[in-house]
Image (cartoon, rainbow, N blue to C red; front, side):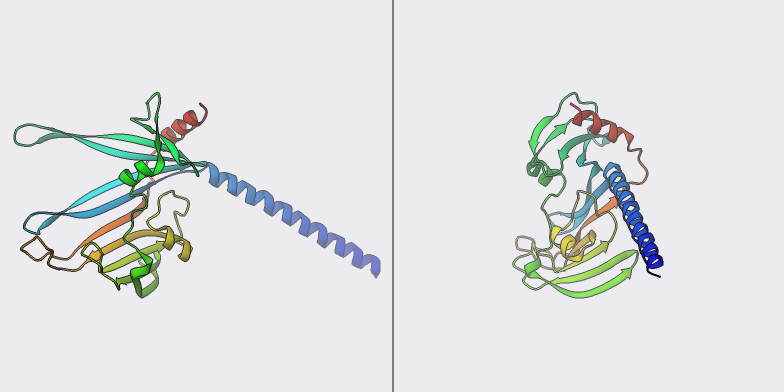
Length: 251
């Protein structure tokens, strides 16, 4: 009876050991696959541009980041217009790039993917201007949660906040945040604070301003909003970015 129990125990031990090794191999493969995966994410921003009569038009802007291995390649589009005396004849978009290694403070700025060399630039100086780095309407100390909905409209969580301390007109009256459990690996973040405490990714933030009078304008401003949103590019061929990053890191 003792021999049988020892045999069974040995088989169970070997099985558990084998399963542990298998799990380790699989998880290592998954981590390696994730590390070598290449993704492209856009950050979109839409905001009002006001005229002297308090009317406004919406201006849209965007930037992209390509994440590969432990590098982030940011893509910025500069629009150049060709005009005659009365109208715009043509528009051309020229992309600029900024390559940054994870946890580094300095990266390299390129005029194109064909550029021979890049200019060394401090990370926060360029990303704050071109990729909304450290810019957010969500200030935890002045926001109060007023509603929370789970699994709504394709999002894992939607939360609505009101501004309990509106210091001036630059503070939104309401903020709506849309969370997902996707796109957690992208270098872009709309709020490090929210991403951290919710253990999800804030994919969209709407900062809504109520209709109000603003000093210096004779007319009352209508309701308006600022919107930031992250979307994943599932269409583009990403090989050109991979080749560029590989070329630069092998220098």
